[in-house]
Amino acid sequence: MGTHETPRSERKDREPVKLTKTEIEKLLPEAKEYFVPVVAHKGLNIRVLPNGTRFFVLRYRFDGIQRKHVMGTYPTMTPDRADKEWTRLWDDIHKRQEPNRAKADAKKAAEEERRTRFTVADLAERYELEHLPDNSASWQMNIKRYLARFILPALGKTPVKDVTPGDVSALLFKIGKDTPTQANRVRAVLCTMFQRAEEWSLRDLGTNPVAVVKARHQETKRDRRLTDAELVALGQAFRESKEAPEMLLAVRLGLLAGMRKGEIQGLRWEWVDINAGMIRIPMEAHKTGKKTGRARVVRLCSALVEDFKAIMPTLGCPYVVPGRGVVGKDKTRTWKPYTALQNNWERLRLAAKLTKEGKPEEQDPGLHDLRRTFASVAADLGLRGFVPELVGHVEKTVTDIYTRTAGDRLQEAAETIGVRIDGLLKGTIDPEKEAEERKKAQALKTKKTS
Image (cartoon, rainbow, N blue to C red; front, side, top):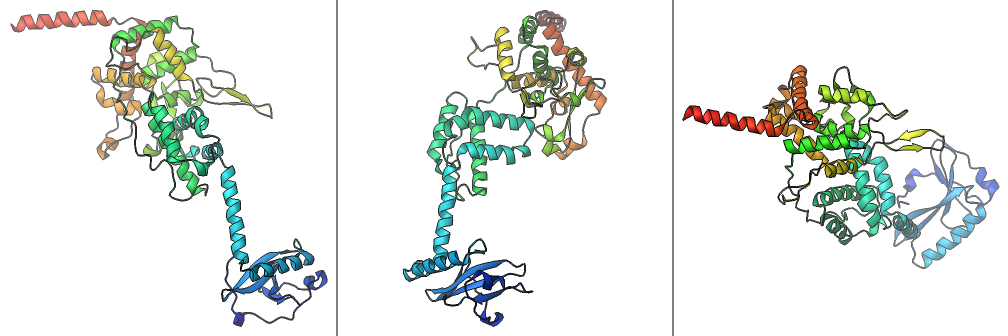
């Protein structure tokens, strides 16, 4: 409680009352609060509020300063309890123990106890509820994966207040040995989590344990794309695969439409317009939605339109790629986005023998490399200028904003790219034959100029 004291000039002197239930209940509320002293109880007053609430308040001096201490509310605190508490408080004062300080210490101890019980697992749960909704759907899925795979197994049982920079550094070092990029992403998640922990009074301000972990892991810049020969091999793996059709469609959406993994995993049927040959992902559901302030439009080539027509939606599931259905206590099923697309891709990649064997300077192609392949094929075809809008990049300049490409031209570009990639996948385009024809054409050109 504070130590503010109502000036005597603003208080009306009241006749003392006895510390009994009858006397206390005679004190009726008035327009302004007032204090009534209690007979034979030094410093004890009854404070009466305009709403009728009554408090037991002890007025006393400590180190020459007039103070007051709220003992309790009537009738929760009975007159008998008030008498005993009054005796105890004066004993403490005579022992140089200030009542308000003891109350503050008890509150601080209770807060410290709460912090001790609040673990990183508890923090993660609150973080998911209060912080994650502000992020894109794809980043939310990534954060949940980082929590489940890395953060909670290592730190979940540790009290939030006890996590040290050493704990964070050890975790990031362990992750970074094999996956430096993921270590950096986990670091970003941890940093934000502990910032929110400070905001929620779970740690003292300025004690974020991630802030002093300066070292970030060196990330290898990825520039991997699938070659024409690799696309042919992947197409053969598609034809021989036992993966579900929607899983193959998911991979094809990355290759033939340049979609992000998160966009594919969270793709809903209601966003797909087969007749128009496009997908409209709402602003709140894609990575750059907050920055662009608009929905992301994905143009579908005719090959992808046919893929969609051949897929049968899973009954009751809103997602194109069915995720996990969870049955609640009310017997209703709640569907969650699919999160294991990387596993499906790995099986296809290995079946197509898309590895770095014999090429140590290269990397095994990942899911994001499918999107990069889409953009690279566009550049090969002289369609580089269409790439930013086709893959959903944020505009970089004012000029970019005012030079958006017309929808029909984007659709034509998407179709041209899709025809090329789908032809390689289906084997109707032979890259070796194309190379031979280019070689002959170059030789003929050289012969004519010589």
